[in-house]
Image (cartoon, rainbow, N blue to C red; front, side, top):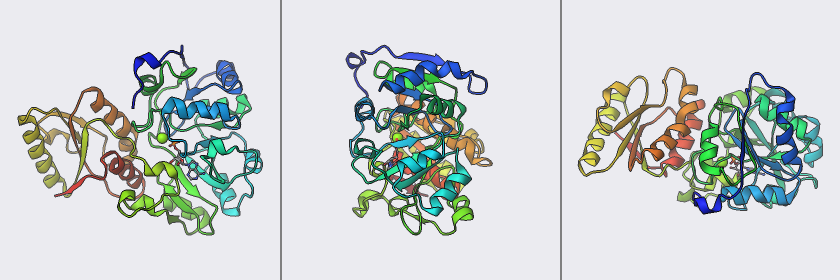
Length: 360
Ligand code: AMP
Ligand code: MG
């Protein structure tokens, strides 16, 4: 739920910083806010994060309040120095160390058994802790210069599509947090891959830009948590990443995914769009560069090109937000091949659609 304006009583400072060309001084105030227990939203290479001092329970408590996040959904702790791993984990398994060395800084989160230095308020009561070292220059420098371990989930109100631009953060959190750093568009646009390295065979808890193939090249066999591949509600599966059990990324409109060969999908979407329009509903269609000219009804948008799936990942959440502001009642989208980056895209789309998929 978005908070009503009457609750947005704080003065949020919004600063613009050039990601490719800034002086560390420009992050001084943001770092100070983090040290003092406040909240700062900042760009990362995945999505925008909402940061607080992860070792200060009052500060991380403010994250839960600002986002309306369930208290059992743990936060990812962001670091800027590999030495932090030793301090924050009870043990660092060899495969965890290898993955950290291969992909950090970068869009990979690792789950370890936590040390006593990580409060339960940050881990949602779990004995494990999620850790990531981001590559985005602003995120990295902010964490480094603040000197704190920055607990940071995505900077959206719980349940809304993750923010890939400062404008999305402003939409959700202006008046509720201390500062928003506008550093331009988040490159990847999907949240980090999460890998649990506490088990003998590590498991992917959330797919992302770093794929299973890339991980297996470093450490050999990796498994998937059941909740990644199966609809959680169906089998009472308890996902290892608590966040994966919540309805997520949902636009306000009713989203349906169409799967099949390209021609059949276009035909089916045009047909359903026409029916809904005739009954007076506002309809949104998500096509690709390859198909967009074949859709004739409703508000039609292209999500990117199938020739480069990173373009699709990069605009998925933004498109869902756009349809929200345009008031679409029904949204129809094409589906994507469930492998490599497509797997992360389909994982987010399926959740956004409440697993509503039509095979044509
Ligand atoms: P967000 O940063 O909003 O994308 O959410 C962080 C994700 O990391 C959520 O799905 C959490 O459930 C997951 N997560 C954080 N800490 C842990 C942990 N210790 N064990 C498993 N999953 C975690
Ligand atoms: Mg999130």
